[in-house]
Length: 238
Image 1 (spheres, rainbow, N blue to C red):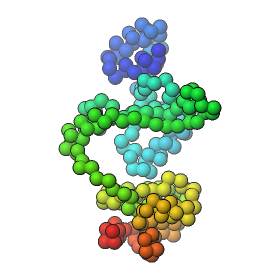
Image 2: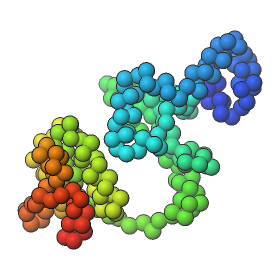
Image 3: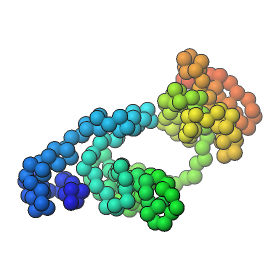
Image 4: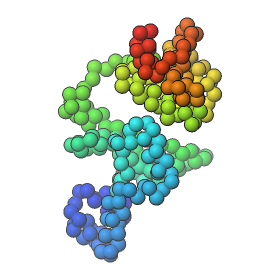
C-alpha cells in the first residue's frame, strides 16, 4: 500500500495525497511522515553504501545527472534494494529507461541458487522522440574501440576514468578496463584479443608527472608523453 501511495506523489496534490493515505488505512500523521521521507533528497548521506555510489558517479563525471529520489516505485515486485529511472533533463517526456537490482529473481523462477543481478530496459520510442526533439537523431555507424585505458591500481582508477572521458570528448572511442584489481598483463591481453589498437597505462609515476604511456599493440611500440599531447598523438597515428 505504501509503495502504491508513493508512486502517486508527483501525480496528485499534497492534500489529495494525504486523503489517499487515509483511504488506504493510514493516519494523517503517518501519511505526512511518508510524504516527508519522499521529499528528502539528501537522505542518502546517512547511508555509507549510497555515499560510495555517488562518489563513484562523481569519478565517472556524471554525478550532475543523477539525484537520489526515495519516491521511485517500479511496477515489478522482484526488485530488491535499488531501483532507478532515467529521464530527459527538462522532464518533457516519460521515463526513458528504468530498472533495478534483483537478488532473488533467478531462484524465484526455478534456479537452484540466488544469483544477484542488475538490469534495466529502455523505451526505443521515447528515445527516438527525445533525439528528434533535440535534433540529435544520429546516422548510425559501428565504431570499434580505438583505445583501452588500463587501470594500474584501484587508487588510480579515477585517473584512468578522467583520461577516458577526455578521449571521448574528442570523439575517440575509449574503453576503461572494468576490474581495477586486474594485472596490466591481463588488460593488455584483453585489448589484443578484442583488436583494440592502442593501450594507455597510467602508473604512479605517470600520474604524478601528468604523463601517460601510449602503447601501439600493432607495432608493439610504446612512448611516454604528456597527457596534454595524448589526443593529438592518437589522432596523428590513427
